[in-house]
Figure: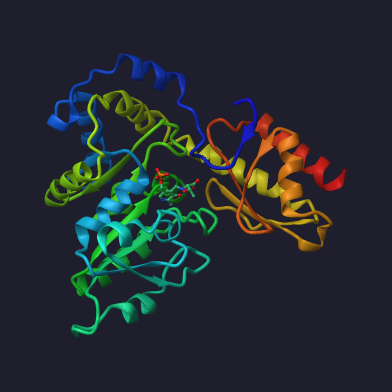
Length: 344
Ligand code: TLP
């Protein structure tokens, strides 16, 4: 990368191995189910997730939207956190396209929703109310500093969902970061969920694509919705080929990104102007002290002038995300840039 880009792990380029695999991919028309590379990626995802079936979709947003639309009918209610990606950053798709009403609950600093809050939010059978149909969790939790949700917690929510005949969906855009950080295999981590999406195009470096996993019946319905939404692609094995490399080669190494995130946070915490909570995976969120003598925009512009890009949310809040293309030298350069901008 020409600049050090830590705005997100979505900025990652495909690796050389991915580019080679893409160039050589065997392809077919996936709308006919004829693309052998897509079929292989879906089979691998089925195995990894422990679900009966999987579907390749163009984005995490589409994967989540399809899950909401399969699980819920118009007017139904979905329980999710007030900081959940599908609530904050997916264009209100569940409401706009599915007529699904989001019922948001406070998100704890550890990314969880309190079980009592979920229990209390489940609607009684009364024609005044919408029908509660779904609980959605996010793992790792983007807005909560990349914190992973444990299997124990997910199992508890799953149990509650079952007791009330609700479905459980996991937005697992970065679930492999969670699996690696917790040392829990994906299938175990999501065993209690009815559906899960995971992204290939974040820390795993594939250029495009996510997988939606669930039961055979769920995926059959998801396939119809993917077509309705225009997400049926043709020779998309070119993309899936990179996804296969992502699953085979890029998962275990996420631990390196987590270690670099910890090192970055430690380096940043040395600056008095910054408050830096300890990161859990590859997302480092921190705040600029309003008394520091420069604005958030000043910090962003100063860093950009030094070739470092990070994300900003709110006047004083920032996010830096480590990934495959951020090596130790890039970290050093980043800390030197902060030093120059904050200390002159
Ligand atoms: N998140 C993006 C932005 O949209 C904020 C990022 O840079 O982190 N779930 C979660 C938890 C996500 O973080 C994202 C992307 C998605 C879903 C959506 O994935 P895509 O971008 O593939 O639609």
